Amino acid sequence: MAAEAGGFRILHGYLGIPAQEAMRDAIREVARAAPFFHPMTPWGKPMRVRMTSAGRYGWYSDRKGYRYVRQHPSGVAWPAIPEAVLDVWRALASGERMPDCCLVNFYDAGARMGLHRDADEADFGWPVLSISLGDPGLFRMGGPERSDPTRSVWLESGDVVVMGGAARLAYHGIDRIRAGGSRLLADGGRINLTLRVVD
Ligand code: MD3
Ligand code: FE
Image 1 (tube, rainbow, N blue to C red):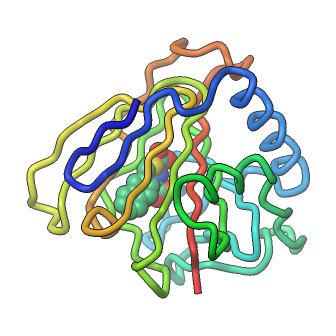
Image 2: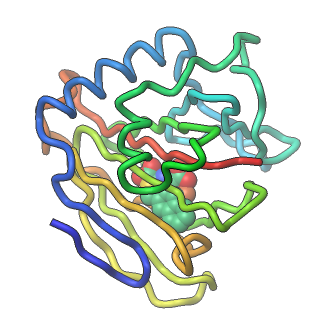
């Protein structure tokens, strides 16, 4: 089921349960090679969401600011983006250019992500694609200005969102997680994958 809201293309239930399970297992392997960590905000507070990445670049933040880096903080290269994840990109975003980064966000029951824009990439002509796994998250999407009106929608396990065109630079965030809303992750929580072309 596809829904269009202000340039955000939301595909509820895009991945069935077996595909979600396969993706969860592939992400578990990514996290084994490149463990989740709490990035430090530029103002010195650890982020509540845990993160890791796959691909040529990983997203990173510390006192020096937000940026893409070639290695996990441990010094190892980021693992490859799982093929099942690339298949979703090919089907919905582009067959021409593969993403450079698959950012993996993990939200426990109390985690949230404040309203922000994703603007650390070189070319906003490429869409960003998001895949949700596990507990539902209340996604808030706005417009190109922080003061623009917002709408909220629950993103559930298997939902995919494509942000292209005007939506690419829209403000967005995750207000809360509905604990116990999915059985995909044995210990609960929500995983979100975002695929980006970086340079
Ligand atoms: C709209 N993640 O990692 S995914 C992020 O659910 C991020 O973890 C949220 O925002 C999450 O930066 C939201 C949906 C999403 C991702 C990237 C976008 C929406 C976007 C980039 C541009 C516009
Ligand atoms: Fe974002």
